[in-house]
Image (cartoon, rainbow, N blue to C red; front, side, top):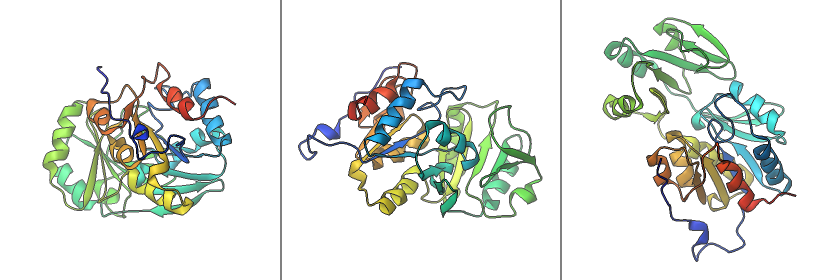
Length: 279
């Protein structure tokens, strides 16, 4: 992949030369964990040094909380917030407390997609537990308790998000799907595969992170955000310094202020070490 060289706002005249992030927002998959769910030791150490330096480190992910807790614990993060479910949920842990839950009526989306695309897999997140699905998803794609249910049960309660998946389609197919669905009052986020998250209108990682910043008294200008997916675009634009991992699609790189190395080459660690040298 050809990397995009983005403007680095932290080097511009209106940015103090001694700038250092007060809050570090980290995507999880492809940013701090690999495909097998492993966190590189050098990255774990860099996160620990960021925390030791006084920065608030916030996991900001599309995963539900039930799939985030182990990563939070593995990093040894102190009690604090996490932005999960693409911003629809903000938790504080430990002990677990829900600080933000934004829901919408999933019925219009579910019924429309089930009628127009009956072959698609559908899921609705159950906060802190797992998912209700219309049919089983490919192995390993969903974590937590997975319960197969009919469409009526999926649509019965307000939801933080609806997941649409088709193993036989492509990412480009789902980018096109998001453009033509035309559902009102929702936000779309397309994943690396033929995967679409449908969330409440205006809800994304940036909106969840904005609440965390407000609660902590931290300006967006003092945020470093690192991510690699299309659902990170709003977060990268929100942050004073938004950094795309080198594996990110071009549209994500273009939204960033800077593009670091690939995950395999330690890009996330390199960006953290720029601001938080080994102690």
